[in-house]
Length: 599
Image 1 (cartoon, rainbow, N blue to C red):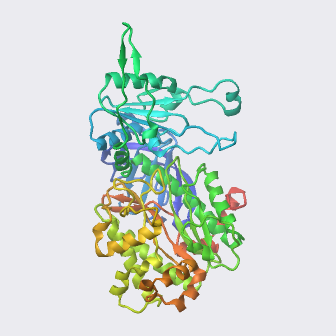
Image 2: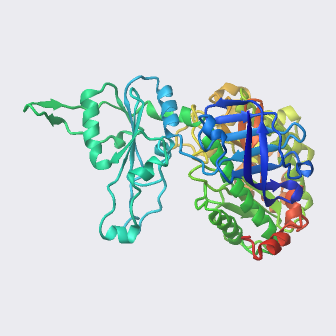
Image 3: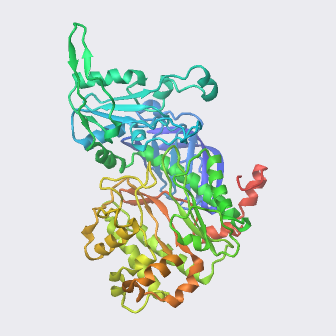
């Protein structure tokens, strides 16, 4: 099979200083194609015009947008958003071919997956979306955020909608609100039409919510199976009696099940489809651009608020208007606060910034953390801690593959941390085994190594969170206390945490860190004789100004290991950008004729 294609290419190339370059070229693809769901994988391809691939590094990411729809779509049944994965025999460059327009959201595929995990042949999945609302005591509309379970089997980002899936008939229906009329059109515009909704997702039927009651009454009187809900309070009101034409009436009764749908949806959502992976990849690409803009500006900034502004502004300018979570731009000792969110303190006199920030792309998250010196040069203590955390992440990432137990990967992070802190003299008075078994490393790394990611930044999984410990009593124990207790239990019995085996097409994060939260040490850890005897209190003072270092990447579990979806520069590459040694900031401004961080 041979196909001639013409593409417009956007190239993110580390060899050229992480600059986005664009060029048009034609290529000829020949080889064997195999279809896996909506994936087409082609090997043994050749490029008629190689666009100087020889000088591009192996880690180059190429994104292709066709100038015309490829002819292959006419000969094979593939969706317009199909992901093509090529392997260059010479350079081994990773090439991602992204068709113009991503195609319809695979809502029906997702609904079928949920039904499979439900394990029933009959029934109706009923999911209402987020209702429109105003803020309390205000006529101002509240910021809209679609319910993620609803979005998973609908792909709709509009309020006041309902989606239903008839398991027996394989019918995916969506119910949208009536069109706006009168003055509401003047103020708010028109609602999407039924035709526009059909173009978004692969629905079998689109109707108005005014007809939903009638459909539910029909289902309860003529169809078998329960109506599956996420929560009891989401149960629809269904009339108890239906008047028949012959003058008789039928009694209806909603058969609601609010127990089994959520775990079924969690099990489905944890394994990502190619469409979802592409959105997460896009979110990471925009997040990378935002991190780079911060690095290029950081030496000239005066306040944490400017870091947040540059990051979110870059995302918004790229049409990613929502953040996956509140940006964390902690400088100095603020870097030791895990979820620091004030982002309002001066940078002067501080060593480094821990920037934990990632945008959503069409409701799919990214989650990236980079730690870097504000001046572009490390202090001795900050460099020591950064190198230790980098080693922790490198070794833990290398362990990611299908079948790997994430509990074991998490424990390895603490093994590396314990050895590294002993080498620096921060841990003392015991052998490595004694120190590791004591759990003292949790004073420096007081959180789990990572989490699932998808429609939520802390996404759902079949067994709960990625590293899910036994439940705790929220009335008597704080979450961080429960985590530490559970971790200490896991030291002696790995099975005390729920199974966390990785599977192909899961997306997870790996985010080790080392923190020097002065309040935590002086108010908590050093008052615990089990921990205090191992901590070099005199040496801590030199590390308090470091605050903390965290490095976080988003990983896709592949059949043969993993793919790192995060391309944001770190380490020496980040320092070169901070110091302006990549030579790209000024070149980009001269090329575009625009000046300022946004360009």
